[in-house]
Image (cartoon, rainbow, N blue to C red; front, side, top):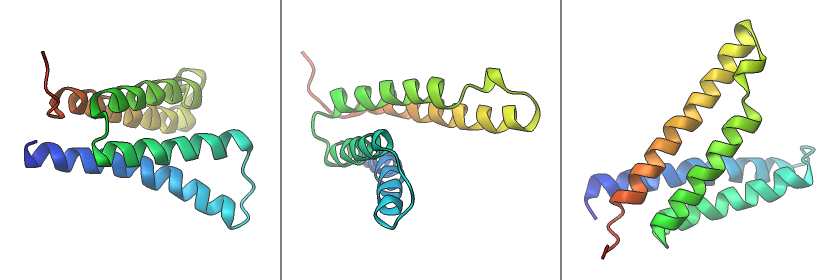
Length: 115
């Protein structure tokens, strides 16, 4: 795998590990956290570790991309807001879309042998 692809792989993985890990760390330190958030944060950390390790990279990155698409639509419905709230939600939505783009690129550039 090219060095620049490996760096992209690790940076994309870091987003999942840090975001999920931070929410889990907060829960361990008394911040009220729902069971769904705990479950999704654990899955996020696991996806990040799998991406960083390169395990089944194509499948895992596409799964992560699908999860981010769902998260963007469910958690950041900018179309339901106006003004500053809409701008904030649009920013988060587009951040997720950028990450989805990176994951899709990584799924195709991960170095897996194709038939």
